[in-house]
Every structure is written in C-alpha cells, then in structure tokens.
Amino acid sequence: MKREQDFIVNGETVSVVVDTRDTLLDLLRDRLGLTGTKEGCGNGNCGACTVLLDGAPVNACIVLALEVAGCDVKTIEAVAAGGRLDRVQEALIEAGGTQCGFCTPGVVLSAKALLERNPHPSAHEIRAALAGNLCRCTGYDKIVEAVQAAAAGRPNG
Amino acid sequence: MKEFEFSAPTTIAEAVALLAGGARPLAGGTDLIVQMREGRRAVGHVVDVKRIPELTAVTPMPDGGISIGAALSVTRMAAHPALARYPAIVESGRMIGSYQIQNRASIGGNVCNAAPSADAIPALICLGAQAAIAGPQGRRTEPVEALFERPGRTRLAESELLLAIVLPPPPARSAAKYLRFTPRREMDIAVAGAGTWLRRDERGVVTEARVALASVAPTPIRAPLAERRLVGEIPSAALLDEAGILAAQDARPISDTRGSAGYRQELVRVLTRRALADCCAQFGSPVDVA
Image (cartoon, rainbow over all chains, first blue to last red; front, side):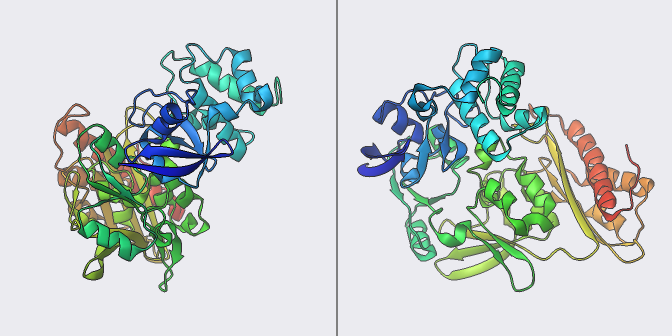
C-alpha cells in the first residue's frame, strides 16, 4: 500500500511516496538515491546500514520507513559537511581503517555517536560500541586505532 | 514482504481495537521486521505502538516500584535514573544484540518474542516482574513468569497488548544477577543463562531465593530444587556449589547446533553458582567460587 509521507533526512524535509513495506534503508537508497548507506545482511546483524535516528545509531534495514515520520534521520551523506571530512573519516584514512569500504559508512556513524556520548572512550568501549558493525575484511584493530585517534584530536580534531 | 497496512495510533484504546481486528503490534521491530522480511511471518496490519505515550514511559508506582513502558528502547530504559535500583535489568537489557539493536529493542518486545534464550527475561522473573496487559475486556496483570507457552509464543491473546513491565520495589537486603554464556562476547544468543535473586535477613540467612534459567527449556523456567536448597542457609562455597548442581537438574535442555544438552547443564551449574556468588558480593559477604 502506497502513501505520501514527509520525512526529515539530513536536515531537509522531503515528501516521498512510500510503500508500507519500505524499510528506512529502501527509503534512503531507492526513493531518495542516498546510496552511501549499504545493505549487508538485511537482518540487523552486520550494521552496514547504520544511520542515526534522532541521534542514535540504528540498523535502517529493520526499521520501517513509516516509523520514522517526523524523526531526524542522518546518513553518511551529511557527515562531511561542506565537503570537509569529519575527524572520524580523516582518522580512518590516516590509520588505514578502511579496506573494501563497505562497512565504513556504518562504522563512521557508530563511532560519531559514541564520541558524542563518550568523548574519551577506552579501546574496550570502542569495541563494544562497534560490536554491531561487522568488517568482513577484519580490519578491526585499525578501526579501533582510528576512533582512538579521532577522540584524541588527531589528525583533524 | 507481503503487503500490509500500517497504523501508528496514539492511544491504547485505538491500538487494542486494531489488534482485535487482526493487526500485530510493532515495538522496536528487531524481531518482528526480521521475521516478516525473511518470510517467516505474514502480518496483514502492523501497529506501531511507540507513539502511545504510556508505552515508552517509566512511571513510579504507588508501592515504590516502577512501570517500564513495553516499547521503551533498552538504551533509554538503561539511562533512566529510576532503573538505578535494578542493575540486573539494565545489565541484561544491555546484553541484547548490538548498540544499534538496543536503540530500538525493548524489554516488552523481548518478553513478547518469547525466545527461550531471551536475555531480559530471567532477571525479570527473579525480580518478580508483572506484565500489565490491555485487551478488549479491559486490563489485567500477570506475573511475567506465567506468560510463556512455548518458543515464540506467549499466553497473551491476539487481541491483547503488553503495556508495561511492572517491577516491585527491591526489598532491603536483596540482590539479583543474570549471567549467560555466549561463544562471542557481543551479538550472540545465550547457549545457557542463569538469573539469581536472594533476599537475606539481618543475620545473613537467605529468606527467599529465585533462580531463573534461559535456553534450557521451551520457555524460560524457574529452578525450584536450587531455590529450596538456598532458603534458610547462610551462603557458603559448598552451598552455592550444591545450588548449581540442583539448578542443572532443574534444567531440561535439548541438544542443538549451539550446544549439547549435557554442555548446557554444565553451563547452568557454573553460571548459577557464579550468579549467586555475585549476589553475595553485592551484599558485601563475598563467597569464593570457581
């Protein structure tokens, strides 16, 4: 069943015709063309589709689009404001914390949300906060190093 | 997914009327949406209950306890100051899935999904939680412990909605703990779990004990042999050992890909002993166990 609904995505209100079955991920990728958010497992395990919903990381593949009407949705496209990379993105490049890149948008958003609520996390806290972001290239150590570097204000704090 | 209707009512009455017409409630969606997407479940009408204020509220109760809205996310629940008196609930909620999952999943949903391995349920049973339920005939309250029929199935009628989990005030000199075993530290399903709750008198004698087990029966279960052994005693290493052995006898596990029945019984023995020891440590009367 189709209906027209307003959504707030990356600070803009957009009116979209959605199917009740559309997930938030379908809304972002297929209706709005925001393909920075990736689909991995499609069942809430891998975190490739992580976006911020009212500031909190969620798996967009297991949220219905209609659930988020009126909520603030932020995707990876909004992170590099004005073309300038965020300190987490810079740190991931610097540390080599990205290999194939498929998990990276989700990692960036989970890490940003972590630093928002805990500006100086321990390595253990970083691993716990990123437990729902699977990297099948298995580059976890460098991801954790990058988040630590971002927290410490290097290289672009 | 098959086509479905979607509603997001703002009152309990509207939601209950929709459920009576065959709709299914949606809280965090971390179970329901996955089941629908994988074709394991067909739903004709989804009712998002998160816009009903009572379902995401934490409310103090007249007896000094609290009511936790059934659809409140684990993250928001854990951050609520009223939950500080219930650390076992906060800890077991934080075992559910990843941080992303905890930002959506609720303890009400964990209860309604009725998995034998559900992380939040043993602690709820140990603390004597009640379920506040609304239906076409009005409201009723049931002990959480009595809600489970079989894997994936509660005893709620299709037309009923779980409104809240109600916790009594924690009595003086009581402590609770839930421990589970998973091969991975995060993002995994309990092979077995044990929740324990002890209440002592001024002399340190156990006056009440509850032991609740996960993943070792078709539903979460109590361990009555272990509980009876503990009452009337002052905890010692030997007593906690015995309670663990009895809890393993109370368990009725199956063998599956995550563990054999014998392995699960061994896990119950060890986890029960350790959870009891944690309760003793909370009392400031540590008991040394392996």
